[in-house]
Amino acid sequence: MYNKKIPVILDTDIGLDIDDTWALGFLLKCPELDVKLITTSSNDTLLKAKHVAKFLEIMGRTDIPIGIGPKSNNKKGWLYPWIKDYDISRYPGIVLNNGIKALCSTIIDSSEPITLISIGPLETIAGALKVNPSITENSRFVGMQGSIRIGYRGSNRILPEYNVKKNIAASREVFQASWEKTITPLDTCGNIVLSGELLERFNACDNALVSTIKENYEIWKKKFFPKVFLIKNETSVLFDVVAIYLGFSEELLNIEELNIEITDRGLTEISEKGNLIRCATSWKDKEEFKKLLVDRLTN
Image 1 (cartoon, rainbow, N blue to C red):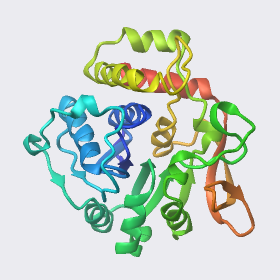
Image 2 (cartoon, rainbow, N blue to C red):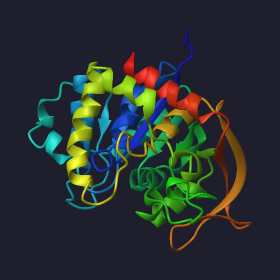
Image 3 (cartoon, rainbow, N blue to C red):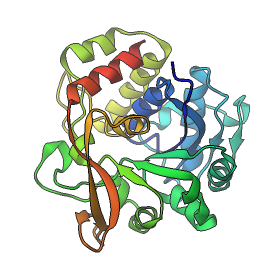
């Protein structure tokens, strides 16, 4: 059915919030996408690579190479207990220590344009742009970044979104680069939660993918509950899964072409001085997307 798959690279900061784990699972269940590489970004990128490696090994997808992005600190992340005893040197697939080089070569060597999906801060991608600016000629950028008119949890209060604020300089470099850029800001990804019948279906499933997400979720809850109130019988916000969807379809979303400027505070504001970004600012059918997500994860 999907003879012409879209070649993609995923760049992730998996290991902190749980939504990257959901997004990685969703990515592996999208037959439209051909995953060429997964790179890690922000904080201790080796630990993040361990998360990716263990997940791929469980899912039988060690054919996907992993690239370790530049390390910025030794922070472990809330999901560290899941990989603390995992030995990445025994991973049967390819692990590349220079994630920036791996990202550049994968794009440059591809016979087809690559879709580069970012679901974290942008250090690794910005680093790749510095090493080889010509990667923009054979790729497009799809990211979970920013907040245009709506903030966290549907609030009218616009705050700097985490992935942008974590490294404003890197975010600016990526937004200013000369490639096609499409983002899901908080306007569309900041209210993706599962509840009711969809959550019941997810919880009733015991396949390897769902079981792995559940295992991570239980670890994450123990770390996260003291920090923020979570509603009972509802997942946390699954921001990153929307970026995965944008990697292969825009059918359920409304896209606006807006000039976006990143301020010194990390706000993503509409401005004449900004760069043209294709922004998914509202849903045509959010419930249909959530159904698609659960269908794919549980099948």
